[in-house]
Image 1: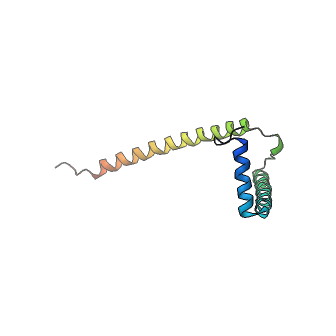
Image 2: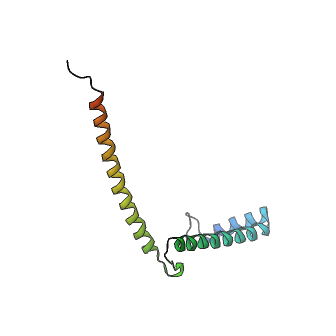
Image 3: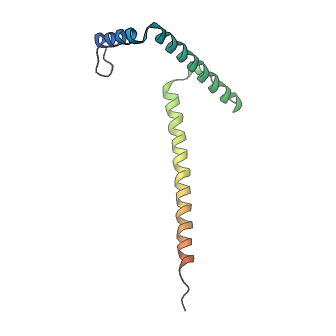
Amino acid sequence: MRIFGLGLPELIIILVVILLIFGPGLFKKLNKQLKKTGEAAKKGIEAGSEAAGKKVDLDNVSKDDILDKVENLQDKVDVKLDEFNSEMDKVESESKQDDKPAAK
């Protein structure tokens, strides 16, 4: 098992050094904070889905489903952005034509 190019023995040594420097209380605090963060995120997602009128079952959501939905949303954003840029180009070209002095 390699994480960031480090093997298991190196990771254990790093954890032991951190434990010696900061003490066991650090890991308890980190664990508690991570648990609270995860619970808050889950509650926030569920509250948002209820507000949108959709019930989301987070236990049965796969990574591929989420990625597909994100890609779909990104495609929609790209289309709207292209439409916006096209309209801005039209406005800019009309503005340039209006700025030209009238021929005498």
